[in-house]
Each structure stands twice: as C-alpha cells, then as structure tokens.
Image 1 (cartoon, rainbow, N blue to C red):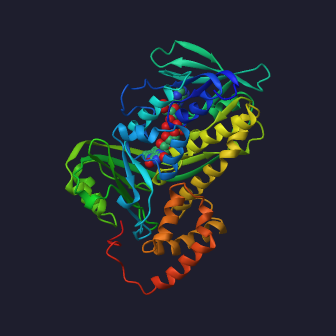
Image 2 (tube, rainbow, N blue to C red):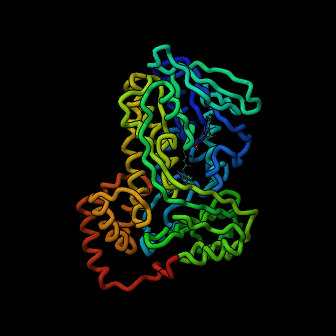
Image 3 (cartoon, rainbow, N blue to C red):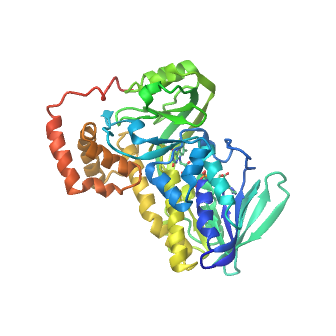
Length: 458
Ligand SMILES: Cc1cc2nc3c(=O)[nH]c(=O)nc-3n(C[C@H](O)[C@H](O)[C@H](O)COP(=O)(O)OP(=O)(O)OC[C@H]3O[C@@H](n4cnc5c(N)ncnc54)[C@H](O)[C@@H]3O)c2cc1C
C-alpha cells in the first residue's frame, strides 16, 4: 500500500466509474467497500442498474490505454476472456459524408459487450487487497459530522427487504451511482447548494441486435460506424464481439426510433447513407431478440462550480456528466477521473479531495462534453447555445472531415481526438491546418473515391 490515508473508503455504485475509483482508493485505505444496488451476476450478464449495457459499448483507444495504466495486465485479461481487440486497419469509419482514410494507423479498441468488460474489470478490482462488494444494497442518505462539514458514512437499505437498513462508517465516500445519482438532493438536504444542471435534449433511441459472425464478413473489417449526418437522424454501428458475434446498434436522433422487428431493423439499416451496417445485418444470422432504449437527454452537473462541498466526499462518472453515447466516451472519462484521483491522493491526501479531483479531471469532462454536445448542436433542431467559438470549430470541422477521407495524417488526427488520446486543440496545430487547407483546395477538383459510397441521406 502507498501512504495510508485511512481505514475505510466506501464507493457507491459498482459500475465502471465505481470499479475504476476503487483502484486508487485500495492503494491508500485498509478497506474499500463497493456498495451496489443490483445483485451482481457471477458471470458476464446484463443487469437492471446498467440498462445501457446491452447496447454498443466500447473502450476507445485512450480509454483502453488508460485502463491498462490503472490495472496493468487488464487488456490481456480482456482478450483472455474472449474480448476482441480491434486495430484501426479493421475499422470502417464513415463520417462527414465519406470514409476516414485510416491506412497506416495503429489504434486499438475493445470489441466486447459491456457485461464482459465490467466482469473482467470487477474480477481484477475484487482481487486487490482489502476490496469487497456489498451488492443488493441501495445508498439512501449520507451521514455527516454534527456541523455537516464532513461526510462520515452512508445509510443503506436492502433491496431484498426494504425494512432492513444499515449504516457504513467511512473516512471517504465516493458517489459513482450514475445518471440517477442522488447527490444533488443529498447536498440540498445537508444545507449545501446543489450543482446547476446543463441539459441537452437529443431524444436518442437505440435498438440493438446480435448476429452470428463469419470470418469473411465485410472483407475482414470488424468495426463499422455510420455517423448520423447533421441533416439526418439515423446512424448505426456494427462491432465484432466475443463468441463470434456482431453487435449491431441502430441509432435514431430527435425522436427517430429504429424498429425492433427484423424486417424493420433491416430496412432501417438499408436506409443509412452508407451500406456497410446493412451488409452485416442482411448477411448475418440473427441471434435472439432486439433490445431498445431511449435517452431523452444528457446532462452535466456543475459540481466544479460549487463553492462549498462537504469534506471527504467526491462525485464522479455519469453522476457528474452523461454524454451522448454516439461518441463512446463515458467509460473513458470515468477511468481518467480515477487516474486523477490516484494523482490527487498521492499529492494532497484527503485535503479538499472532492473539489481537487473535480478540478483536475475537469479537462476530460469538458473535452468529452464539447465534442459530443458540439456534434449534437450541428443538428439545427437541437436546442442549446451556439457561441461564435462553436461556429468557428464547426466550420473548421466541415473543411477538415472531407480531407480526412483521403489524407491519413488528418484522419489519424481526428481519431486521436475522438479516441481521447489527444485533446481537441491538437486539431488546430499549424502542421495540420496546412494539411487541411491544401487538402481542401485539392478536394475542390476531386471525384469521390470508392471508399466514399454515399447513398441517400436518411
Ligand atoms: C446507450 C449507451 C451506450 C454507451 N456506449 C458507450 C461506449 O461505447 N463507450 C463508453 O465509454 N461509454 C458508453 N456509454 C456511457 C457509459 O455507459 C457510462 O458513461 C459509464 O457506464 C459510466 O459509468 P458509471 O459507473 O458512472 O455509471 P453506471 O455504469 O451507470 O453505473 C452506476 C451503478 O450504480 C448503481 N447504483 C445506482 N444507484 C445506486 C444507489 N443508490 N446505491 C447503490 N448503487 C446504485 C447502478 O446499479 C450501477 O451499477 C454509453 C451509454 C449509453 C446510454
């Protein structure tokens, strides 16, 4: 153990943020208890508390690399349990009206279900000394010192028997209970100002189906993205996952709902502006039924702007900010927050732990929010502020993406930003600007390549 900071830390919620945060806490506390409302399955299986887990869920390159930094050896564990690791030469990324020129690049993502990723990470975390999980218990209320300046524990209720309550004393409590976090209410009950909430209404609908995969499918490509164009509402992804399957998620925005029945699902895929997802759907043998989910809005709680928070308390993961999942950043941001927690614990111990971690992880939340919200706001129907800086960035991206369809330097730079390996400002560096400007001049005389395959917009 690194320098000891206390006896007991409690993490509320054993989703991806909770698991990731337990790692640095186990480095400084004798015991870490993960409190989880769901009874946890003993093998990779979808569960009620993570309804998004049945849809596309991948770790982007920056998330996979950081998960390895958090838990060395975990990438081999994932692969040993059947997760695919998919290199960028096997991707087909259709964005901005064409396919990104990813030849020569070398990035990896996971091809796995969310339950498998969570199962492997949970096994690693529970193997750390002093970490245990208390499942089937819901966090109901915070316990504090009499003057309410410091959190001292949490009150829990059993899911099996609501009359059964217990308290857990703790030197630190972390709220990682996801989108439904009660921290705003808990803070208000304790006399603290709750965080302001920024909400983006996008009315996103996902429908997902599994298909049997054959080695020759899509000429060996294993990851397909057909982006929702700014003048459309439909997109889709197909990802090679464990047990020789394709996971196909069809996406609708602004109220558009991809159908669940196989014929409707196939027709919807056929209507996408690029045919690759349809090729997977129409050529594959379906497995089981479709699952659907709706996400009316995504929101960000501005804990970073609070002037007062109780001591020994922190909030992280979707409890702080949930992003439009089309960009696949949520788990990666949660892992970055956990790495920042590790740095803060080593540098400052428990002093102002909550605000310090929020502030040092702020860059990741901001980048991911800007990227996802920026993409959403490109749809004229999405309501939200569009400041001059957003207009400038959007105009630049409209020039950059067509160049990324034939210039691997630009395509690689785009993937490094979307994949959270680089910060978005890297797209503005002079060398890249030169590529974009000279590339767009050439584009003016260019005929579409076979990669572009643009059909009708849905
Ligand atoms: C459709 C969809 C697709 C997505 N795809 C991706 C993707 O491809 N890549 C990616 O990185 N991210 C993706 N995300 C985002 C990702 O799911 C989240 O960002 C990530 O799971 C955040 O983890 P979390 O631990 O904060 O929340 P969650 O994973 O939601 O976990 C919260 C946990 O807290 C538990 N809980 C809730 N309340 C209580 C309570 N009171 N007491 C005890 N336990 C409680 C829940 O049961 C749950 O286990 C997607 C999201 C959606 C909606």
